[in-house]
Length: 563
Image (tube, rainbow, N blue to C red):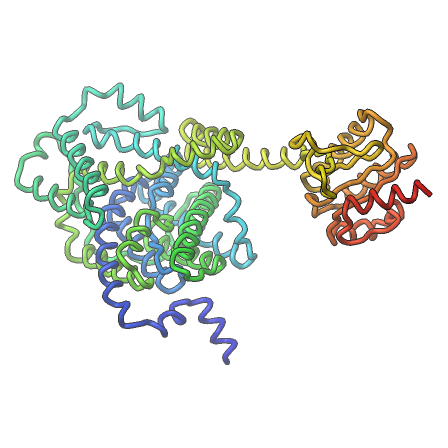
């Protein structure tokens, strides 16, 4: 019985932390929940517009995400709900499909959320949490920067009062330029006023829910003026009903959105785990990456079944939740309750919310997506990875959001394969007044011992690199100033060898032994030693011992030859 209860508590972490809930946590959780709700409502409405869905769907997704994460999540600070990058990814991808009606469009967005959740649960069953590392940091930074520019351009028509823009990044720019005669000054002034207001709040009054205050002020402004007659568009009617739960009825082949769902899963899991780990280190609270897959999966399935769209952990709202003093995921439940109250009793009041204000909320919210400081840091550390980030960025803008992230992942893998294929082959020399050896190229003061070549391969001896390693070592032997009598292979940086690598090593030994050169191995790991023994060519090295050092091999070789 104890074992079964342990399984249940691991699946439902609320049963673990809920039973230990301290009454002193209630007040900070309530305050954080109310604050988080105030930040979530305007963003959820704005991000629904990025998907191309009615505003209530954003509220549904936020409410459901927060409520479900309460049950399944392991991080006390993560705020689950709509995010800008996933919203624009879904909207731009589904928007590019030839669909018969808006009903089918909305259903396909909900199906994408369900598929995203299913993929997350399958990843949990198969213990594939390592997929969090599929998207490298340069790819993610380039993707987010591209998404930031893409979203900004998608919001400019609302800011300028221009109607009818659609298509990709450059299509929208061309449309704005071609139709700039539609420019509406009142819309622009309201939107710019909203941006300035939000920036002042963000940098001077961080604890104030600026977006909520902006919504209130702008609705009052629209209600007491005739700005609608001057061309300022408003949000319009929001459903005051709870979502209806059920599997979306769709005639379109859902295989068209499987790549989209997989991309949504990768992005949300990478971003969510990054945030969760940051909070875990900060507060010394453990998190369970596998359980976070369950949480992400159930949240997205629930969002899809309630007419929503794919969701994930929001960086801005999670940080706000943490700064507001949230102690447990119960703060998210309070936020969900706030959203529920808005849906049932205050949705009609949002009718006069100006569209330029929604644009200003989105534009300010995405400022952090373009992390130019980190991009410059990547440039200083590794220009190759910086170029990968830039290629991903440009691919997002030119080819589309989904295609951009996929191209970034592919290029990063090609770069990885190229590094594996071309490992660095290092010639080692003895450090003066020492028995240690290090890279001769980096330390020219090191000394090579005549007749002895010490080589280290900084990489794995596997199928992708085997032939290259062999050719490089043979070339080094041929280009030495004096005849090589002893070749020492330092395996300190090569802990893994496979069948192809072992065969290559055997061929290398046969060739150079036939030329009268002895071969020895230093610092071989247990896996390497076992592989050589099992492959049947241990006799080439006389004996394999753990922790065999280079200077010991050289002394043994000298003593043998002196005799």
